[in-house]
Image (cartoon, rainbow, N blue to C red; front, side):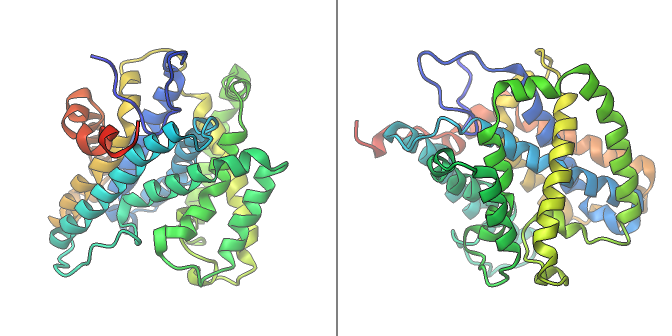
Length: 346
């Protein structure tokens, strides 16, 4: 059976090259870190080490995912075929999972009257709303002379604007925009460059230093900056902090993304095939996280010990790995990758 199409990947055509194992490996490892980060959230208040790891992972895991998404969006030109795939692979899953998460969290969060709103992304669905906007604006970023500085300026201005509403989580969409545009600007040789052995060797002390810095910063810095979902004033900082933090976080995250990619295997591994199902893992693992939080697993003291935190991390990795497998993709393909030929003209 042919592999399912990945909505985050470049649309295929008859002359398309085979899937690149490097990018499938990178997407799988990034989605595992996403799941682990969500699993660590209830443990942050009890452990400075867990919080430091949480800050470190949040500094680069979504930026890495977004950079790769931008790289595979380079060919998007708003042609009818690509617009159809955008609707089928992004808009429809957004509607389905936004509704599903709203109904599910009525039970898990104990909010029975939570309304279904397609304009206010809930939990994980913000990424689909952002991807839709980023993809639609791709022709613009591909046509301007200095796309990355312009995207950074947009992100910086967003941090100065607490009046930006929650519609489509626009604050987060704008603040993460530079990573998507960076992906649009990259070429294959850039990825080959970061995989050189010198870069791999340098990545080890960089990550070690970043972890030490994160441990030092835990009581001194609000890690909500890494969520990119609030203006500076909403985080209790002067408005002029926003542009400075935009540049600082972009530089930090870009370096960590490069270090992360440096250690991604370029050959086929046992998890390479799972890279085609990362959107499934991303969208589905949130139900397990929400259900676990509903049952207050973190109230048990054992989970706040080192062995307990390691166990939580492993369980999160196993769950999201299972959700990326072929049987799960076949089961949920109708809502994640629906066939929409009936909705469009030939």
